[in-house]
Length: 423
Image 1 (cartoon, rainbow, N blue to C red):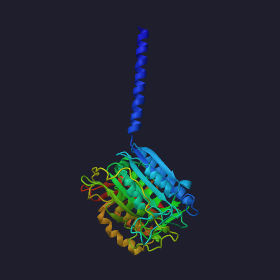
Image 2: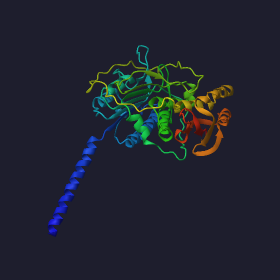
Image 3: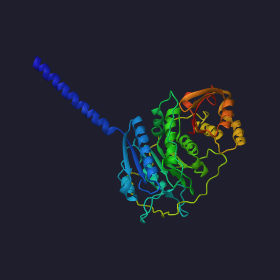
Image 4: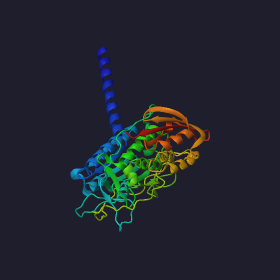
């Protein structure tokens, strides 16, 4: 009898293990995939170091995003001998997407635009052999034909190397941690696509040995959003990226302005690019640049691609966002305008009258310098502080998760701000 029980238990354990292995295999097969295609000019004489750092940082940030939302991360890195239009074409044609998969395409390198090319998004300068180069918009359209849940296309190109390093430090306010719900909100709570370029038509983009200005700003904006904000849309995130980019003096002086198109599904509409948005600069006195494009531009060809799937992605309801709640990117832009040393003292003080759009008159402000709270002051003292300390402050961040709104939800009664000081 004992022998019979032992055999029975052994069979049960074996059956349990078989079921466990089968369940694990099934979960692996059904887990959606976060595809990331990264291509960079890591062999370029002027951009090699910047592009290498861009790719490393982008990979680190987006692998964390994939993990946080429960997706399998699948990177495809195209550099060195694979830095070619042929390699891009092969990667795109070989891409198979499930209905819940996410696709991100990221390019860092040289770019250009042409008079005869009507598009406002740039052309990626990859091949110089007459094979032709891909416009960024064509790349986005081809990826959208794969019908992923969400597609993000980013081109940090038209780079002009400027002798200024991007800031390397990142200071977080104590008591805050990255909230994965922010990533789910950005990548899972809608369907469609977003395409981004680091500069407007006719402009150049800035880079330094420490990395490209726009890539640094975008990754900072994503990082700060997950730590500091309770909600965020792609429009807000990309607006905030522009504000952060203009905290870099060279980018601000060159008047580099990013552009993006957000094509996300609502309850009853199909996805697809539908409107172009030119980002409003943080500096209200700036005007669009008329800088020349790269002189060694190569005429773009329209490479033939055979799409394996056609048609728009299935719509899904977007996450509701209160229309009255202050837009954190607007508040950030306002505070950074007050601390913009390129503006005169008179201009900065005149901007203080806009505070009523975001704060009650007697709002209290918790001021952090890096990770340390240094003051709890009335709002009017914060205005005076930024009017006089602009030269010392590089960046201001509103910490939405440590701030409080009035009962109407329209104005801050208590707001936490973090100041990043020049070193």
